[in-house]
Image: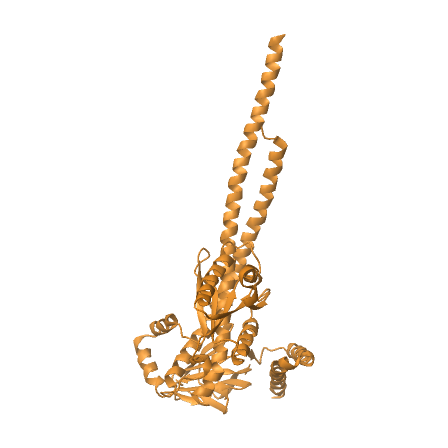
Length: 137
Length: 306
């Protein structure tokens, strides 16, 4: 039997995923890295990107994260995501609406709110881009 | 002798009040269940966050004290008090007990000659505090989580607090909220947010959760964590996030407490209304009988006189 590690994906509002996995690839702040069972202990920040869960060398799940943290121990990998969206179940139209809404907020934002609005816009656009590439693949 | 019609009107009005309070009780019970579920769903994140934070403490090189959010500014002259109350009343002693707790802290700080600033979450707390400390209240967040509490609400508040901290507008930040114990009991809890103190409770719980083998593994693992980027950078990222999480958790607890308090208060009100109706009905019946008796006496004595 292949070795597995416990993988957990937690968003502030709920525990999204908790399962045994063989390999998971995480978008770390300094580059993507794969976590196999027995990985050396590591704490890292995440950048906006995609978490990919593999099983038997095939992609099993893909999840978009806007950012967060990851803690890795030999038997466990815990992702604390600011926001996580499953790419399989995401609705493209919802995401398009979100991009439009955040664009409007950005355009209307005052000077001191610009940064936050720009960040929200960047994240929604990144999600849309991820959905598009997933659709082609 | 009381007027029969007045009594009837009173009984009707108490009955309709009772209908309202019992409906409110039912609504509060449903909302309480939802709030409790939400609070439970949010728990894993803060637990993992605690675990990660304690690994980071241990990972900090000796001699460094970490960012200001953790170490503080080395003084405590200006205090920011975040008072969490509800937007709506009719929930028993919920709001007044929070405000009482807040007043105690504020007065003590003022007596010590500290400067105090107040940030209100919820209209009710602001309304009461405004009487004595109008000049100290900086701002009020209203309608937080009116529909459903989301993490964005907490982020909004924490962003504001962080901005103020960065501008040096306060040194120490404490929040006061009601911790949810059960529908009957809520505990007013002050919690210091900045500089951040890991609550001893969560730490001992975390230790209990792990069985001994895991503790050993964790203990062995802790020493050799790799950090990417370095500890300082992660801490600087993690601490603001932790502030949002703490606020979010407190908001959720508060929301559950509010519904619990309202449910209990409305339950009492419904029962009181029931007692009142019984009393009034007895009085009503007695008066009615007295009238009948009186009329009978009049008729009989009239007949006898003939």
